Structures are given as structure tokens and as C-alpha cells.
Amino acid sequence: MIFILLCVKIQLMKFTELKNDIADGAKNIYLLEGDDAYFLLKGEQMIKSAFLENAELNFSAFDGETLKGGAITSLTSALESFPFMAPKRIVKVTDFYPTESEYDKFLKNTFENFPPTSILIIVNHGGKKSDLKRKGCITYVDCNRADEETVAKWAYLTFKRAGITCPVDACTAIARYCLCNMSRVALEVEKLIDYKGSGALTREEVEDFVYKDADYRIYEMTNAIARRDYDKYLSIQSDLCRKNGDETSLMSGLFSYFKNLLTIAESRGSDAELARILKMKEYGVKKSREQAYSIGAEKLKAYVTAVYSALADIKGGITTPQSGLMKINATIFFG
Image 1 (cartoon, rainbow, N blue to C red):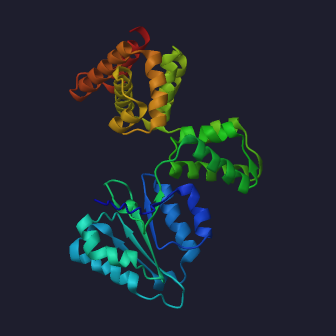
Image 2: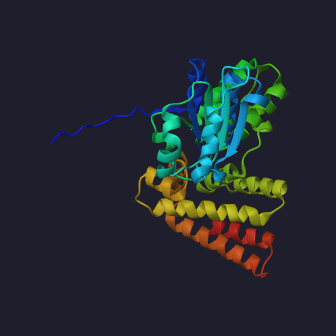
């Protein structure tokens, strides 16, 4: 018996590789997929900026939720239409997850014999499983949240292009404070560029001007607990309550954070396994593991119980949010 193995080359790239790839010419089908809204939006803009002319005549968009069964033919018909006084027309479809049978029946022929005058951009936010990225005729662009090093490098180069020098540790701080969320990083970098104009940006200026994500502030609070630096803990807590005006939201954040730390402390699973279970990035699990081991599982159990009890008492009208937070602090400070 003879077995024949057919290998299809899958076209994969990170978002950071897209710019150079576009410079080499257009691909037929781009699948932008991931959980970072900035990458998804920026990727679409880059492709359109490079290849789209007369957008009002040569661009059309579809909602993938409406393209089921025979309705998919409206998409293929748009791809087969000729551009008007331009070399290319671009068709975009958002959140498009055809089944394998739909692909074979309605898409395969068009995708594998793609019209040379069209470009298809598929923008998927990653909420559902998609097999499109496994198709050899599709260029898959990974738009998931980048790691800290990649985000810091992006910030460094963006400052440099704007005529501003920024130390690497300051760029890394921006990435951390924004939890590597590129939409937030881009806003903070733009804000700093407007403020500075040119010259050298210092770490102190980054500390003063960059708004730290509430989740990152909770991470900082937990680090302070691990070091028994209760003054720092209370300082961050006071700042969060002042800015948000809501102790209950802070307590809910602490509960989720402590609960994840307890799960990590009690688990023997790998960083990758825990990342999947907790819906976190592996880097985040690694940093959380360090905190969990510093505090210890027994103390974390006490913290989880204290926060849960306080939230239950607030919901039941037994205590106020302010008093509930004081009880949590007493458990953390005095055990």
C-alpha cells in the first residue's frame, strides 16, 4: 500500500512582520485574527493604505454573522467584481467562521483560483475557533496581544521616529502599566510624544504621565503585600479608590486576582496549562507564580475568604464598602 502525503504550506506571520510583507506586494487573502484591537485595526489600515484606491468605489464590507450557507455567494460575487479605474478592489469581512462544508461548497473554488484584481481582508476577533488559518491560500496574521519585549520595542521605535529618545526601562514600564494592551500603549505613547515634542524622555516622566491600568495597580498592591510594604499597599489602594470612587470594584478585582494566585499556588500544572485554564498569557502566569509563592497558599486562602465575606456582607446590606475594605486590610496586615 502506498501512502501519499500532501503538504500545504501555511502562511503565518506576526503582526510585526506585516509591514515588511506588504512591501513585497499584495497577498490574495489576509486573515487578521486575535484579541488585540489595535493590531486588528492597524493591520486593516496598513493593507488598505498600500493597495486601495478610490475607496468609495473599490471597497466593500460584510458582517460574517450574516454570511451563512448560500448567503456566502454575495461575498464571492464581490470578490469577482472588477475594480473601477484602479488595479485592486478590497473586500473586508468581519467575524467570519465558515464551517468546513461551507468552505468546500462556497469558498474553496474562489479562494484557490483567486481573482487577481481583488484582495480579501478577514478580521476575526478570535472569539471562535477558526480553521481558515490552516488553508494554504490564506495569509494568517497573528493579532493576539504581544509580549512585553515586543511592545516595549514598538514604543521605543515609535518614540525614535518622532525624534524622542526614551530609555528601554521606561518603554518596558509603559508596556507593563498598560498590560501590553496595544490600544492603550499607543494612546500613552501618543500622549507622551505630544507632551515632549522632541529630546530625551525620562523614566520619571513616564511614571508621572502614564496611567497605570487598574489590574496592574492590583499587581503592584500584591507585590507590596509579598514584601510586607503595607504603606505602599495602602498608598495604591487609596489612589485607586480616589480615581474610581468605588471600593466594591476594587474588592472585586482583588478577589479575582487572589483567587487566580491561589489556583496557581495549589497547582502543579505548567505555565502553559494554567494560562489556558485561567485565560491568561504565559508571561502573566509566570509573574503571578512568583507572587503566589512569596505570599503562600495558606495566606492566599485567608485573603480570598476575607474578600468574599466582605463582598457578601456589602451585598446583604450588613456592612458598607468602606468597612468591608478595612476588614480585608486587617486580614492582610494581621492575618
